[in-house]
Each structure stands twice: as C-alpha cells, then as structure tokens.
Image (cartoon, rainbow, N blue to C red; front, side, top):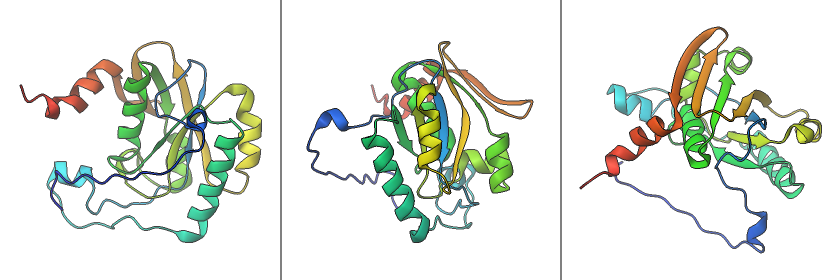
Length: 195
C-alpha cells in the first residue's frame, strides 16, 4: 500500500451538535481506553519506521465490535463522552498525542493497568493498531454512568487531562514519554512542511 494512500468516509448527521471531536476539552477530565489491544503490528506504522515486516495484521472481532460500537453510540447519545479518538493509524501513542495538541492541553496517562490486563509490554500497548479501540474523555461526574454502561466490555481508565502543556505517559514508575504537546505537533506536522 503506498504511503500516500488516503481513505475517507462520510455520513449524514442529523444534528452536528451531537458530533464528538477528538480535541481534549477540560483539565481534570478522565481518559479511558475502550477495547482490547492485541499484538497486531502487521502493516503498522511502528513496523514501517523500524523497517520490519511480518507480524499479525489487525483482526476485526465481530462479536465484541458490534457491542462496543452500540455502547459507544449510547455513551455519546447520553452525552457522557466529551472527546473521542480511534486507535487505528499509529495506535494509542498517536491518538493521545493528536488529542492533546488538538485541544492544546496536556495529559497524564499510566499504562500499567491496561498493559497488565491485555498482557502486553508498554511498547505493544502504545503502538499496536488493533481494531475497535478508542480513547475517550469523560467528565468526573459521568464516570459512574460510563462505567455502568460499559459493564462487561473492555474499558479501563488510563489517566486524565491536565492544565499543563506536557504529555506524560508512564508505565508504573517508569516515565516513557514527557513532551509538550507543541513538540508532538511539530513532529506530526513536519512531513507537511513542504516550503
């Protein structure tokens, strides 16, 4: 697949006020990972950067995918979700960075619980491109309702939005990433600087 390939989708929205964007909204809000991460790096950006081939290609697990999509729709309809980003291209690390610089807010995330649950290393959790996963931002007062709605589905709290500009990702006591969102934006945007 050429690296310049662009895939887009469009859909009709009855009321644009019901749309959820990816930009972080408010310090103190909670960040959750929806879905299960697997060791699926076949065709991933990580493998492209490392010039590796092979690996498991992400699989769609239809049984749980349908339940997650229905529950995500219900959470959005109930206004429990402030922002949301899928975890496809680039995985969790990319989604967190994009949410941060889109909202010009920092975040603090600890991967330990999610890595333990899915039996993955921090690198695997950050860069796997498994399907049917999202990061969602939730106000603290909506936490109970969200967790009740997702009961029985893979949902785990990662951390929170913060009012300082740094993106801080840890695994237990190990600091993996600490960068201001502006530096992450520059790294993300630099391939587009053609002038």
